[in-house]
Figure 1: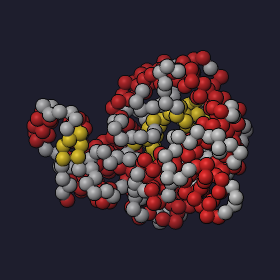
Figure 2: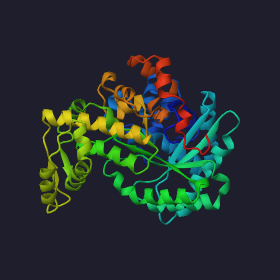
Figure 3: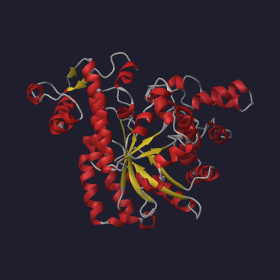
Figure 4: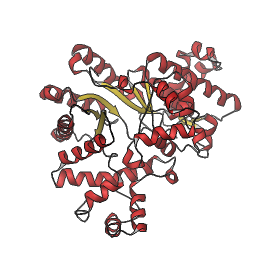
Length: 425
């Protein structure tokens, strides 16, 4: 929800209250109050500067912290409306009206509130208001559903509160259809939510009427690890039971292009990451060899044993040779085929992927490889306010920058509602 408001929305919403807004979460170079004051005069240059503060552009590419910066501008406005003005519900309904105007028929919103263990009721109140608002906005023309984004740092604690919400508010069960893991990916391996995913599987089986699907953002920003580890994370998220994977740039961006984005990128792994990679390679050795990946099992076992005696906080550095780069391309193909086998969906968002992923040009975009694969694929407009795009813009981008016509693309994508988490859709 925080990324849905456009810069025009923010200018309108903040026009009467920008001086009262708490701007401390926003760490931009310009004073937001000054940006508002000047933009409201109608001066074209001032409006352009205001837009620049709200929108992540190509110039911000490859830097997730820049995304967070622009995202936080809108969050400051939203928090003021929700917490100070008491207009949380009105703000959500404003978002849904925009979707209806754009002709949307089915929309899944997601939102996150960091869990304060001293205030679980605040967590429940926030998500309850969102779900109630989306339920009330649904009509015979447009259906709204809600995914609760859980903080990667406290998955089990926040999940238990979700279950409490579903138990206490059965009227919201049809609206709350899933869980989401998003925001900062680096430093949070998928294995950390494995206990939650196991519990979720048990809960879904025990009570299908309140079952929840999972959307997991992965392989989007992965400068903290090797390319092999980034590919593996995508596979691990899928095999743990995620229904849809957000972005998966690591599976579609050519490794040579990925390495060129930043000097020294992906040359090191934490010891624990390397140990996990060795275990994964050994587990899938036979299959990897079928895809032409060289796997020396004896050498991997020796390396793994030696690393067990090394500090987990240390780093392993491994250079990229021509053969290693080619092997990564084959690993990508293996995991894409695995996702297709598991019927796990990739959500690809052209503009967001270009900018957050630091993709240098449209020709290098992961969409080309995704379209040629058999992986189930959905096209999205990730945080359309932050990137100043609509879903229609993203579909038009694909037909402009690939050799796929609109008709052929529609056939490849199929009916996206088959990927909905909503029960019975």
